[in-house]
Image 1 (tube, rainbow, N blue to C red):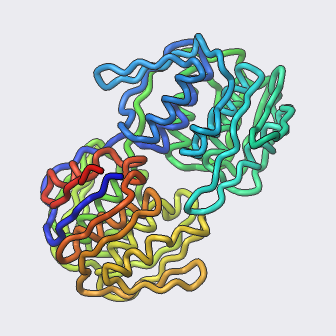
Image 2 (cartoon, rainbow, N blue to C red):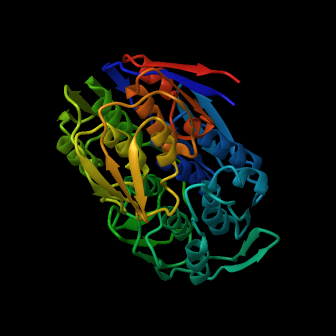
Length: 417
C-alpha cells in the first residue's frame, strides 16, 4: 500500500484548482441508467470511488466514453440488472443503482453494503420508500431483490435525513406513475446537483434545494449535458490546511455559497477570506484560534469536515469542543493525532481539543477518507517527518491531493508500495 511522507513546517502559497464533487458525481453517474440517451458530464473528478462506480455501471452494460475531460454515458444496452457484492463492498454508494434500475427496468438485484469504518449507514429508508411506491422487495443471501412492473407515486416521509436515500428515491420517482412527495429530504448541494441534471433530462421536480421534493413521474427521460458542481469538502479541506500552516492560497473553480458555515468557522479561527463567483482566497499569518462546532445535516456544519477542522484545532490557541451527531465512529483519527502530540480527549460524542503550540512527526495510519485528510494537515504542521499509511482511503475522495499541495509549497512525497 502507498504511503505519504510529509515534512512539516512549510507555509502554503499559490493557486489550487478544485475538482468536481465526489458526492455529486456518484449519484449523477447512476442517473445514466435512467435513459437510453447520451448523458454528457463535465468536471467528473478522477477518483478511486468514481472508477469503482464506472466499473460497476460498465458491468451492467452502460456504455462509458471519456475524452477531453468529458464523460459520456449511454444506457441503450443495459443487460445486467445486478450490483454484485465484490464491487458494492468497496463503496457503499453502489446502492444508488437500486432506484434507477427498478424504475426503468422493473427489477434490480443489489448487494447489501458491507460495514463502514465510520459507523452504520442502514439502507432501510431506501427500501421503505421503494415499497411505498409499490415495489416488491425481499432480502436473500445478502442481496436486495426488488421488482415492480411500474412504480407508483407516493408520499414518503423518511425517519431520518438520508442523502443517498433521498437520491435513490428521487431517481426512482422520475419514472414512477403519478406524483411522489419526498418529505424530510436531504438538502445537500450534491442532491440539488443531481436534481438539476434530472430536470435537464426531462424530469419534473419542484422544491429543489428544500426538504420537500415533489416529483411528477414521466414516461421516459432523455439525454442531457451537465457540469458536476465543485467539491465543497475538498475546498474546505485546503482552507483548513492554510489555516493550520499559514500562507496565502487561492482556490479556483469552486463556490463559496455552499460553504457558509465552514467559512464562518474559518473566519472565527482568524483566516482572512475573500470570495468571488468561482474562487476563494484564504490568508493566514498567525496561529489559529480554537473553534467549537457540532456536525449536522446541510446547511449545518458538515460531518465530512469534522476531522480536518479538528486537525486545525490541535495547534490552535485555546480549547474547542467538537460534537459529532451523524456517525458514531467518526473519532478514529483522534488516537492518531494524539500520536503526533495533540491533546484530545473523547467524552461520548464530543471531543475536547486542547490546542498545543507544536506537533511532532510520527508514523500514523489513516482509518477512513476524511481522517486521511486530517492527518495530512496535521503532518504539514508537525515538526520533522510524518509517515501516513493506508492512504488508499485518501485516493477514494481526493484527486492527487499530494500533487496539489506540493505545488503550493508543501513537502509531501508519495511512497509507492
